[in-house]
Length: 319
Image (tube, rainbow, N blue to C red; front, side, top):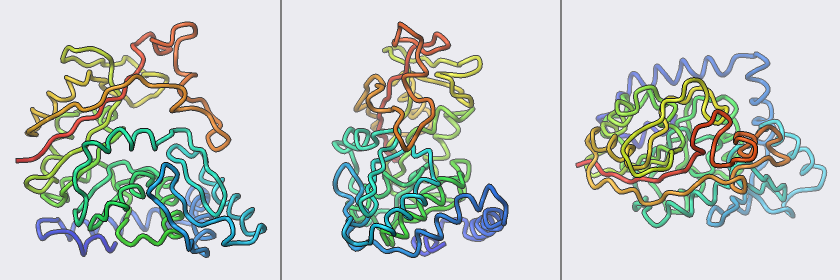
């Protein structure tokens, strides 16, 4: 829990320690659901990558010639234990992981308005396996804390970073609901692919605002419906076959939510329709993907008959 060393005095240290210890007792149980991911993490922790490169589209952790072929096959099996891989791509000692999402495309879209991360305290909410955290590391942040409540993604990141050894990257079994424990703690917060899973999005954005230090920046990325009006879709059951989705706003609506939460200088800087080329099945993610969520013969609609998703990127600052 070394990230506590980087937090300002405003953090709720006692509560964070208590929560961390509770979550560690939970995740360290010797039950099948935890061992399924803890064992491959422990196996991969025996290796250290000499060559680490997070500057390109593919996060490279170890060159192929650093290990024997027998070890590479064992590593492949351990990496396969974390399937389905949602974010990537990665290359681990020559094992190429083609994830469901070509996350490099999202990173390239936000780069033009990426705030200065050098020596900054950064949070990545819902960090998954840490692809974006590894990409952030090239910008030399003071530290990055990934909030990730999923055991699968938690251990996947820990396995990858045990290979990479990037000390300023941290993860804990936290969700966006734990942001109130971090008042005025972060210079930059990334909230990507999360807001539409929250039943009260403005309240969530207020929690993000409170967790930012004065002058801090939010980078917000979300599903959206097309349109110039400030409105949001409230799906009856699922949206594109996904449960647990509450509101799908237009980009303008999302910007207005940010303003109501207190953000200034709100800017919608990118909007694009989703594509089956960017989110798709691969050998590392063999389940249904984007093309399976659309109405047959009409890719402008989801299976439920709603407008097919766009993705929008916004930036806002705290006064």
